Image 1 (cartoon, one colour):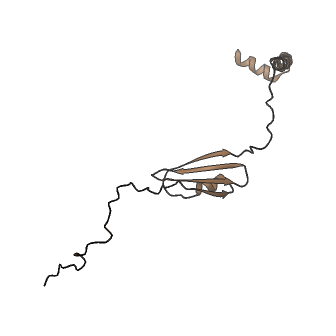
Image 2 (spheres, one colour; image 1 turned 90 degrees about the vertical axis):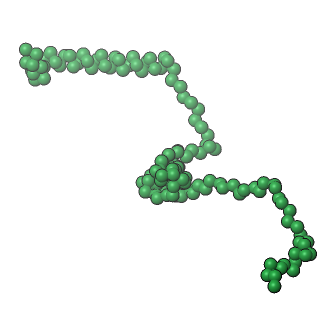
Image 3 (cartoon, one colour; image 1 turned 60 degrees about the vertical axis):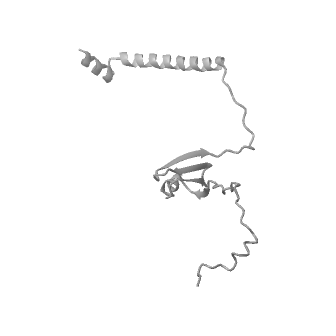
Amino acid sequence: MNYNYNPYQMYGNPYPQQMNFQPQAQPRQRAFAEYLLVNSVDEVKNYIMNANSTIIFKDVNAKIIYEKKADSQGLSEIKAYQEIDMNAKQQPNQYVTVEALNSVINDFNSKINYLSQEIGKSNTKPNNPFRAKMEEEVE
């Protein structure tokens, strides 16, 4: 008896297999980032995460967004970003002119000169204990 006999072999395969040489599109792995709500940066620091992952945290008490990344060894890095409202009207930039800056500087200089003169007057009085002590140390 021939056990290798295939009764369908003599008729052939009505649906012959064709070799498909077209490359198959591999499904792309998308990076997945979680979005979690936290109360402080301490919660971000204490959050345990997998290696090679990124997690986004939103601080509900402040307008801060944290990004925590872990490398292949599990070491993590935290970056903080300030959340701003792009639809809010921005204040125009305010500049200080050179004349206004010079005026403030001159005002400070006159106050410093006045105070240094007053300090000089108080140091020349004979009953100033600090002046007497300084003179003793010099001699």
